[in-house]
Length: 614
Image 1 (cartoon, one colour):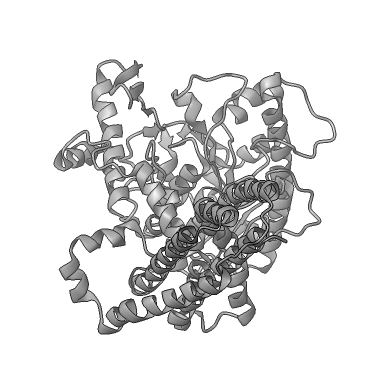
Image 2: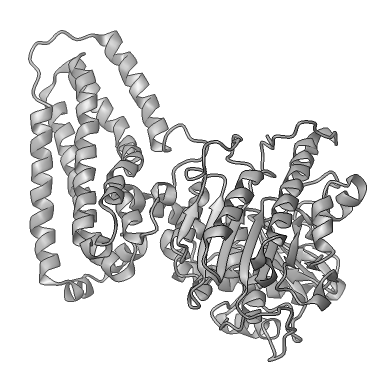
């Protein structure tokens, strides 16, 4: 092994050791939060954190590897000095971040982020609020740890003298190392790149944040902010005008239709991946692929004109759990410290001691979704890493039959009242569902249609098993899609029907007079939290965008948006507004288009402003 190859290994080991120390400091400082955590789980902090540590050091690797390579082939002393100075700067910055985020986590329950750093603009206030211990730590511990790290690097990378250089071999090694560095930076050979929550594994918040790499976490936050933080984006009106526009839209009464037999039912929520509204009615009539859904609908309360707020799973999750609308080109889910501040159904249920769990057959690390669920009061959160390996697995994760099996097992051990949530995978590409004989549809949507047929059969099996249980009569099922999906009908892009999804309330807790009923008025996906919580007599004032669709004052209206447009659907028709051209691009409601689009603009402006201020 050449000096160059040994130095690459030393570089990796040195940085992993430095990151280990930073993680240990965080745990020791917050020891009180982890006193009841098993020691084996604490050890997993260091194991699970390696993936993010490797990703962090991979971002530095191009310049470090290049300097090592240049020094190896030239043996010029100034190159070695430059390398050690660079590493000293990196060590100093890292330990500064580690020490700075200790009081920040203690106060905000989040690691160092751009919002906290923005307070450095007022240094006098920083010094006034800092304790002497924090000041001393900054000026003693950080330099001390930096010195130790630099000392190790000095021992690791000694001056060369007249060694034989293998130019071809070292060049090949450099090329391969840079390639592996790219793979390491994205988190390894995974289908989904690494996100902050990609290393989360515990129900203990402090354990999860200890697992993250301080360097990586801060850099990821700045990357997100650089993409989405535009203070002038979506400023259509004054703040006062926004409230005026939304006043009638958000109006409510003290009268809502009671549809449940009990105020504290068990709740099973199934979030369907990509189930379009067309799938369960228009296409089902033509192809008969959703027979189980059809059977359940005959004894349920169906909302046939429900519309998704966005196009992505993370947007659908925030809508269903928090009543939060799509932010067009921005994604609140990606910001761990921001999504933690949202009111949610599960936070409300926790006040009545619901035992809550969530299951997903895929990787919750996608789009930072795991962070959202781990910051909600679930006692159990299982994704593909927690499912038994004897289930058949597809490329994206475990199929719906495995998901429902795990959810059904949970009903056997959960203390009532319980909340069990599940997010399906089978109707997502690559549609590799285990069907023995697949039906033939149009080539473009053959996979989606076959997977829907499979998903429907899995749902039917699950629901029928639940009906045989004693707890079924006290259980409310909430069936809803995360977003819609293109089908053989080929709805127009950004059209209302392109966003229509399924939403249905079922189960024994539903009053008899509402079974088999269909509510055909326009409702929005973001209205689900307030609608459900009002039935349970929970306070809902924090859900400022959500409305009760069963309230007598409810105004039928749905809003959706994506990166290029936003749309509105009301009883007067629909309209689409181009966020690029800043004008109405499609008008199917005549002269009322301007006033109706104004509501969607106000919703986008208010929610985006809130997103920035979190």
